[in-house]
Length: 290
Ligand code: RIB
Image 1 (cartoon, rainbow, N blue to C red):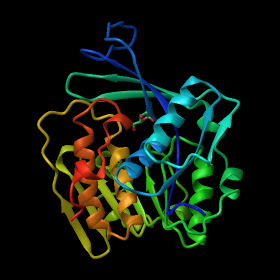
Image 2: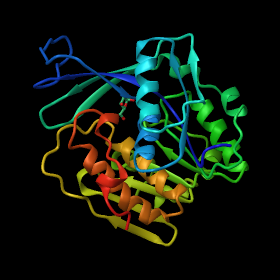
Image 3: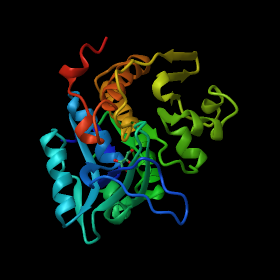
Image 4: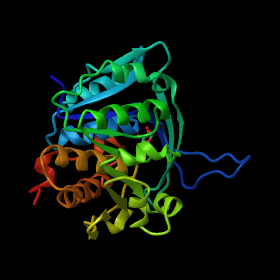
């Protein structure tokens, strides 16, 4: 039986180094010791959803190597179904991440096995029992476009975290239940937030970092205030935590504003600890969804 929440996306080993500042072109800076953590936008989203109680499966790929084992262990220990994560002949994807003292990150991704996630993997899925399909864009765009088309035709609600940003066919945008973008992406796509709906999705969420989020529906815009945290340690994967928590709550029957309110709390808690997946809170740590 298919899980109520399907996440299609990448799984990466995050090679993280703290630096005082990022080097300019041609410059070398010394950083701290390298830390290897489980990451990738798809795996992060699935883990965030599972930690807050969702029944979720990841559709993705890892290599037959130590990083692949690290990712499977993180997914499985969080309760994510990995039966749809295939083992590719390519190496597991790697993200090279620098984190500065303000908690900001910059990332270069080497996709590796993620490039093998294909439309035929989607064709092998049964969508019976699925309520939500959530995608992000570190796997081939054509696979995501195909998955959203198939899910939408099967009556499954679709969520797309438009990260990293890419151009999408107009038909795919029309097949989306929720488009998640940050405010910079929103500004690239439309003159104002309501204009995002003219692109086709039934609704949109604009994430605003430390200022919370805005839910854009045909009936209007609802601003969801941020949750204050004592110290921002590392923002890596906060957007994925948000997407995972929104998807978990939508699969649970919440409306989009309720789901966004909950997800703002999850994302806020995630920035108080280092890394992506290791920083995601459990339902008990988040507290009441209302
Ligand atoms: O969004 C954060 C993620 O982006 C990291 O975990 C890294 O793997 C890259 O995919």
